[in-house]
Image (cartoon, rainbow, N blue to C red; front, side, top):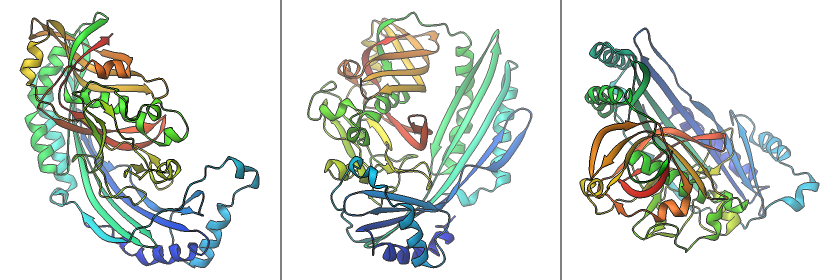
Length: 465
């Protein structure tokens, strides 16, 4: 699928509207978005192909020399002078709010004209082929064991086209990503659910990995059905890449989104340049820092993708900013301005967030644990950026005794504590590495965007329950 022909046809309209609004505002930009998505799903009883969550529209961002304004709309065709007058009238500020507005300096609008493309193989797979693959996978899992009550196989591709136009910049980007899922409902006394998730910008890669993962997801289901609750306590823990990513996401992901610094809602604001983690810990974020679901060429403010080092050798070194928060704080934007949709405000948001690889071997890390657990698979997490409390839930853990993994599974597993205590307890970091992107992240309870996280295996000492 090529770049959106609809957006291509709106380049001139965008430029004309920017010029017209530029008579009133010192800075004007327009982001045009055209996203297509699809869902292919099969289980024991049914199968379906349907549209996913897409969007198509425009958002105008303006700066009057001191404050930002935004206005979203479905179309920008028609008389530009009339439309500019409508937008200007809509963003007029009540005089009573003047004293409460956050003032910023004038914005840069450095010249750049470029089209970015990341190729996919999506065009080689039609609805019938993808639906057939999902049916095949579901049927294989259901037939593999009489205790499988149901098995879901799903593939979810989406395509993104974005156009950004300001007085001096004209950018386009076009890319795709897909996720694949296997979910097994297994009953042997109790009912459990085991899952496997894949993500890539090549459907061929996802399909190959899903087909190669059926035995692994069945084996997990057979172990989970025997899993017991964990005895609460403080343990030596080895994390898989998924849980490493969850810690990164919750600890110094949300905690360094710099719009929270503006609102004084994050302790990270006061700890820049200070030790917040073990000296062997390094952490990064950025759409250009890894190749995953949150990788793009420019953000929703037209800022090119960055690779930002958040923690360097245990020291908190940088936060993540959108255009507005960077202007308010007097820093350079880091390419983290992201929107739930063109109808929603741009915020400072994570992209690909991860711990950097270390030098230890996983087998040596496990061997170093007298008694503890290796924990796997993100379930959910929460963080309080203002007080630095964290809670991360793993789907399951495997007990380690005398430096060896056992057959004793525990599920679920909740890890909690004070963020610096957890991060400063990191004593080993593996030389393996994986970034996983299969879900969304909200800003509070809303403003959902696609994110990835991950890294190597970590050894830490934490509270489990």
